[in-house]
Length: 102
Image 1 (cartoon, rainbow, N blue to C red):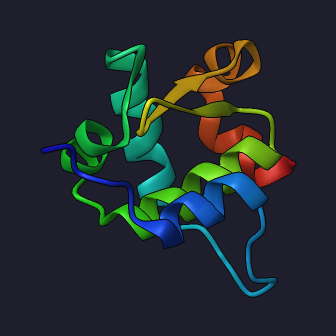
Image 2: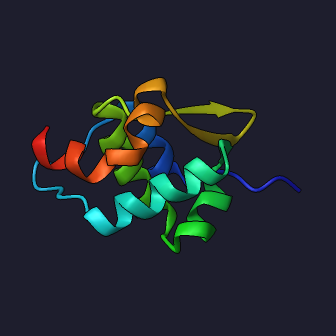
């Protein structure tokens, strides 16, 4: 039996919309980049486990990072895959400075 994706998570990732008051956690962003750097492309389940985040919170951070051009998410065959973009790979070493000044 295939597990379906949480509709709220899918909506966040497809619409790429966040509430204006969303303020991402620097610590969370750094954890996401760290694990994405170690595992080049993976599903949201593994990323959520690695970063110790629930899917909805992870999705909000992923969308925020997508808007900055740092990551890319795709939905294929009922699975959400997330990977660093070229810009994200380039910025991973000075990620904190990039976020502060952009």
